[in-house]
Image 1: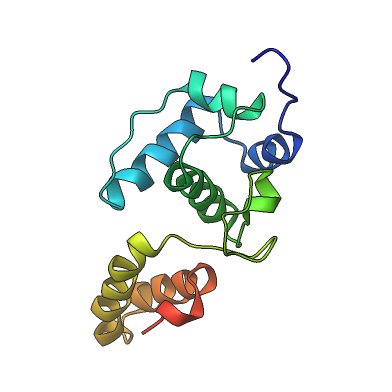
Image 2: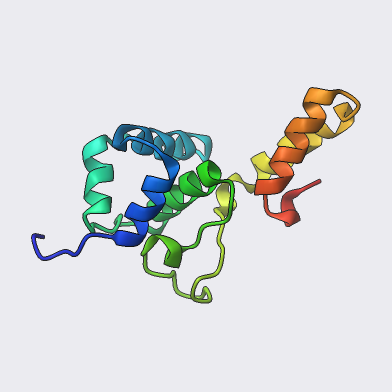
Length: 137
């Protein structure tokens, strides 16, 4: 375990977010809960990721990637964070968890009838900027 190299890519993105380690872990936990897989990561866990520990499952790696993508308001790939690319995916492809897709589509469907409202329209436009175009209803 002492031989792991720090994950400089993940550390760079983490610095860019401005999060504390605790906030980073909380963001991952929040997305896990949204996606139906609650997690209880701590600042210590987030620190271990920055020090080079790769989350054990592809699902957890995706939660980390999604948390960063949401905060930075741009797509983030496995390669961007220094995680191994899952089998069957092109190297560096921008990926999103399919587990939240239905919830994102539902959100767009609920907002769409209210686009005459300024706040709803602003929310819709902001969500369109970060959501994959295939999910925008």
